[in-house]
Image (cartoon, rainbow, N blue to C red):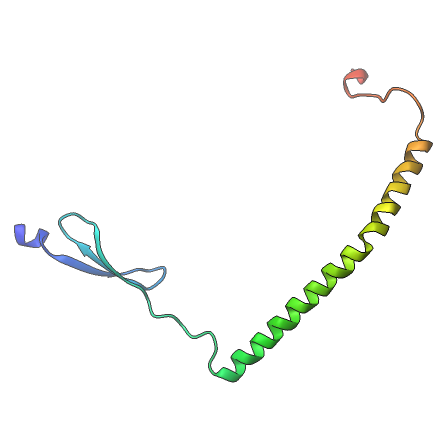
Length: 102
């Protein structure tokens, strides 16, 4: 019986596929061997193509943010003018609260 507790067990992780070496007596992980990584791309040409597409996408996002920053001042002016117009059109006086309606 004592010999069975001295054994170590090798178990594969069902989530990531890593190999775990577990001590039978304590139940603690003694060793961990990560699963081999899968290749993202089959060859260098497809990897280079993906890098170019990613660079184009980054450049497009950057251009959109620059355009939005340029137009931000005009947008704020329009919003302020609309809020000012609504404030002038609103009736003067104390606003009605939900508490007042009871």
